[in-house]
Length: 140
Image (cartoon, rainbow, N blue to C red; front, side, top):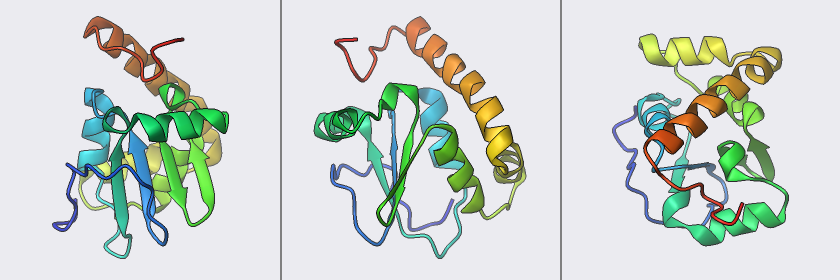
């Protein structure tokens, strides 16, 4: 991970002219993925922990995007969710180190992302259930 990245970003607003990654900070898998993925140095990244920002969760939910169903990556005016977000992140990955190379390879095509992401999401949901952590959208 680039030295300038601060994972404890408490800002709850998506930044323009940056890549915004909105993830579930209470999910160990999501946090580890975001923490260990080495994005290209040219990427200006704004990390947003959805648990700290319920207004962001609600804003995306109003757009029909459920953060319980996948992380979100925004680039410029484009919103990528779930498998599509992982595919976008794979394109932004430096591919230095085993973790980044593996994740970039796994999610390097739209097809592989669509096949693998539901498995990752199911694992995340099961892990959150085992850890007794509530969904982001409590009223579901």
